[in-house]
Image (cartoon, rainbow, N blue to C red; front, side, top):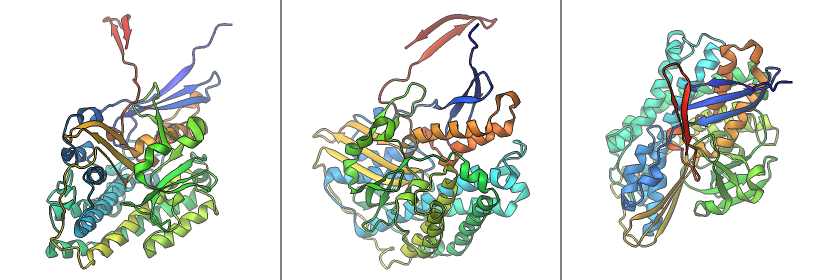
Length: 478
């Protein structure tokens, strides 16, 4: 019997995400999905071209890694620089950093939910793709679209009111901040709070209604156990800016708690894969096959014991009830967790804007090179972020490692694609809405691919030469 050539379905590009990627689905001879892979086919190389630069340049360079979460990169960068200098930031500089980081978290989450994902919830997964987007949403739900834009604007406005720039903001420096917050700008930001609180509640209402009306779909959507990593404070409270690492087993058992971020390499390993520029990170004590874990809003709420603010805590308890005492494994719940974080971030911003020292001009301490190595971390919108710098005695960077949240979610994104494809894709009756559901599994993670790609090994380069009739003339692989 002749061997049947396996069939493939290519989804390229994956839409409504940040960056460029494709998905390949492998079908068996019955037209059922047998395998799936998520390919990230862009490479930035920040780690390499930063080598040889002075470590003090990194807080200026690293915001350019990503236009969606530049503050998270800068925060992690200045923390690494402060470890090299052996200093702590000035008190008010510390408060302003928190303020900007929370604002960026809101801006990113607003983009993910209202612009990229809500067309599926409000217009329908099966809607015409020509209108299943932010433009179609604005036509049918103009108030929701406007609120999403305004919420994103509020998050960016915080950076602008402090540093003068909404994106790639400057002024977050080792030792604190270069710019203070004026009283006029403090009052202007406070005036936004009632509106953005209402928008966050509206968003939570949208996702909760969808979850209630589509319980079977939501409950089965890429629902698979993994371990989890997030940052918590001394009492297990969720902390996006500082704190220590908590690793949680898939069964809810805490594997490691209050791990200093500087020790991340003791617990996290990476392996390269041949089909992507994203590596496969894993929890070292359990090994490559058993140590797959997730980061980001779902992971953070799973590992956390509580939220810091009352409104977010109330919603957090509803989230925890979904798992009935166990971690919530369903990938779809990333959306709900993202909005709970948004609500809590707004509450914390209001508290910070009322802090008596927030407009102080005592915002920066100064230091010099003292130690050869620095590690900084923050909770970026998509998950736990690490910056690791090694310098020579002149302060030049000899090694840079950026462990990005999207990269840490890479194994889970591949698993999610496979699970959803098996559930929805039928090769003998292929329809666009089936493929949209596969793409939406990726959108749950809100990946930011352009800042997450690096490879510890090499991804093979294949060059093929075809003639005018499409015949393959030559091929080389490196």
